[in-house]
Length: 294
View 1 (cartoon, rainbow, N blue to C red):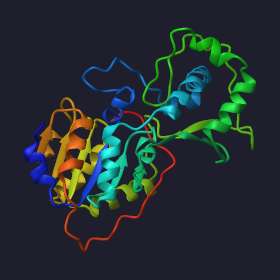
View 2 (view 1 turned 180 degrees about the vertical axis):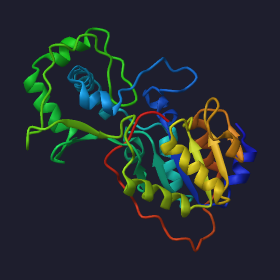
View 3 (view 1 turned 90 degrees about the vertical axis):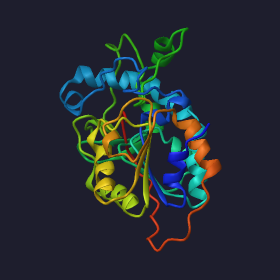
View 4 (view 1 turned 30 degrees about the horizontal axis):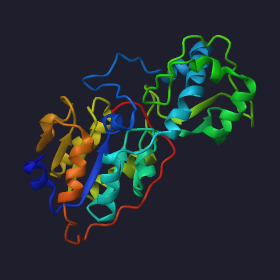
């Protein structure tokens, strides 16, 4: 496999990387917007906070799906990015995914733009807890639900740790153990804004780089697309690897219509470490939240 234009653009440059849901399809996590993706209606923050039926359905489905997400392993693309970071080629990764696979693969400088599936926050008092701790509370409130709902054929899981469950009417939602308030996964839902400090961390990754590589994102969501616009406006070259068109194609210097894993593995094999730069090193960031579609 050859990608001479991509290699020529990135060779010798310190790279910032922006990833989306297409990055994780080879790990068995589906993409909301890929060319082969099934129709999907992710829950909005307004539905979650205002409709107890929606909220019960979400937690019932998440009660099954989060374990699948927790057990999912990084693929060759994640491992390639971690290797490129160790080699000094990549300065940081901004991910729109909530699956923590970059961190599992060994990447250190990661901005989890939309949060992660692994933490839960109370919307009333701000109390946080791990998703594993909430799982114990939900299991006690709903004994046997996970076994009966999964059935013999297993479960289908979505990119936000959701799972497809038909009957959720009997599921009991657990409230905040600190104040009795409403618990929510610490991820950015559709209709929510990414926290400002996290956006600034992501901009710092881009500003410290000499090229921006987008991997597996259609850039439909503005929270990711803004970094492509920012890089292009600053004269920083942009390369995109994605199956199908993206919102940023017109701003890209190079666009590769291909899967992430083979192309990133090629980069890991072919790109030497760049010459030392006087740009500031990017401070490692491990965010505690994220999302929902690239």
